[in-house]
Image (tube, rainbow, N blue to C red):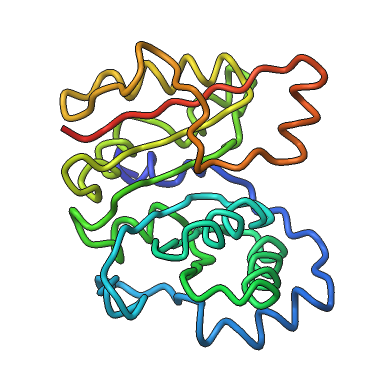
Length: 226
């Protein structure tokens, strides 16, 4: 096994399938043909996918989809492409898409690395956001962290000039790691001196608010492509 294949075999996620509700199952069956994006080894025409051109946001790992739905509802003029490998989360997002009558959301249930490599055109995205990725807090698992030099280089290629990478985490050690990795790229500039204030477009989750009440920190890291 060569080094490239070995690196690719290290996943940043473990696919633990929770039980889907009937509503989530029905939402996937009903709405996937319209809002779902199947994996294929060919580049997507994002303008065709959304039926329009416009500011386009890619979110990696949207969890239960509530915050992504909140952003799509608050900014209907923007396009939101979400990637989540856990089916209950995909179903939950599609429930919100139907309930809120959202038309500016598309969703993939494939590995984000595969989607980025094979489907997302270079220089096509205005913002890539990764909110509360798995911190893999044990030192022996740090190699599984999503934010690594090679991954960031791929993200940069997908951004338009002045496009933004926005990562948020509630693990200080991971925040320091993310800040260090993004700072290594000569193609990016930090929009703050170190950590950014929470941008107005990022909704706070119930989990995040509970953590803040318990005194937990949250760190937003926002870098712009030069």
